[in-house]
Length: 298
Image (tube, rainbow, N blue to C red; front, side, top):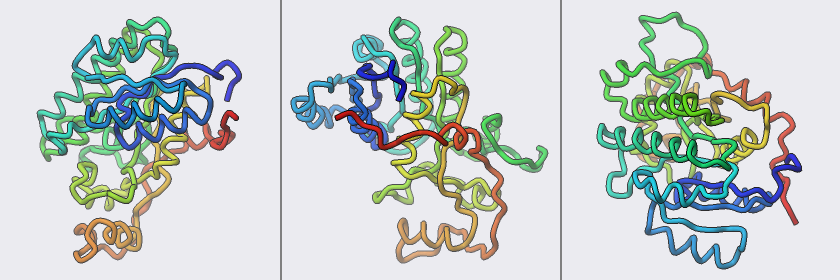
């Protein structure tokens, strides 16, 4: 960690999600003061109990559609880690949630632009904002951060997760560039965790991802490290594909299927072959070579 970052205050929003909660704990371990902006008010009390035990943690009930609550949470912070979590009353992606995510991204970036102390924003997006395109109408080449999912392709095949992530991230980048906000994005693969469900919206189109060699996943610890690395490294810029697993052969599919559907066939991916990996996270790998994930303050 750069000495200038010691004892700095950062905001994690939404802190009630799986990624947000893990980020809060890791940032506190590294010596940061943290503003935990919690969108799920059912989680507020558990965070408040935690804050009573740690003077470096402050908890804010926030709403991405309530501009004032965003400004309150960001006050005095030098950085923001932002991720959108599905509302508890609508736990799947559809057109409505897509519109909500885009509005939230706009509001959050506008709030950052209005907060003088914010030096950097780490915006969590998805690999689904990168991979979806009509393979028949494009030159087949490896996918990297320069690629964007085709919005019309996503609409045509009702790939709501990819559509939402693409439009929200593009909205954030447009506002960041217009308002001079220093932003980097993490385009994460499927987040692996013990409670992963077949209903996870990322899995829509899994068979096509598998066959195209772009079905990737990421462990929570690695994803947290990636976020902190791009925040702390002053040379970070643009977008970063983030994954540490590639699912491109039958044994990968069987392993995933055993997690999701113990008694069923493997997600319709009964292909016995090995598909060439067609996606690269080399940009992030280079940045993280010297990253010390174990660094923490005594």
